[in-house]
Image (tube, rainbow over all chains, first blue to last red; front, side):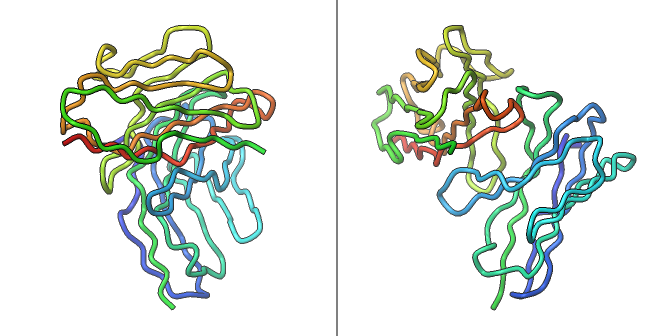
Amino acid sequence: GEDVEQSLFLSVREGDSSVINCTYTDSSSTYLYWYKQEPGAGLQLLTYIFSNMDMKQDQRLTVLLNKKDKHLSLRIADTQTGDSAIYFCARGKAAGNKLTFGGGTRVLVKP
Amino acid sequence: GAVVSQHPSRVICKSGTSVKIECRSLDFQATTMFWYRQFPKQSLMLMATSNEGSKATYEQGVEKDKFLINHASLTLSTLTVTSAHPEDSSFYICSAQNRDRGLHEQFFGPGTRLTVL
C-alpha cells in the first residue's frame, strides 16, 4: 500500500468538530505535519508534531499521534466554512529531509 | 515571516518549447528548496531537492535533462521544463526551508500551473 494514506473526503456541518485521519508505514518518521491547500493555491503549514509527542494543541487544532498504530489525526474544533480545503498529512524522517505526502482529504463544511 | 513566491503563476505554452519557473524566498535565506508536481485531485510528488550552489538531487523516475533545476542563490531556485509536451501539464509547487527557523519547516509557494498545448 501507499506510504502515507488518508481518507478522500469528509463532510461536516459548520460549528461541529472535524477529524481527519492519516496512517503511515515508516516507523522511522520523526516529524509529522498537517498542511492545508485551498483551491489553486500552495500549501499552508497548519501544525506539526514530533514523534516523541502524543498530542499537540494549537487554538482550534489538536493533533493526536499514536506511534504504536502509526496513526495521526487532526481535529478542528468549531469548523467554519473557511476551513473547507484539502488537508494533507506528511511525514519526514529527519530535520531538513524531504517530505512524503498523503493523498489529501477534501473537507467540505456545510452551513 | 517566511514568504515564498513563484513566477509565473500560470503559463500556457506550445509543445516543444521550454518554460522556466522561478521560486523565491522573499524574506529569508533558503539553503534548500524542493520542487513538487501535483496532478489534479492528487497529492504532491517530490521531483527534486535543490541545494544552493550544488547539483539538484532528483527523485527516481524524474528526468534530469527534462526538468533542469538551478539554485544559484540562497533566495532563488529555477525549474526549467525543456521541450515541454502536453503530459508535462501540471501544477508545479516549490517549497523552501528557512535555516533560521529550523530545518523541519518547509514553506510553500503558491504554485505555477503549466498548460502545454
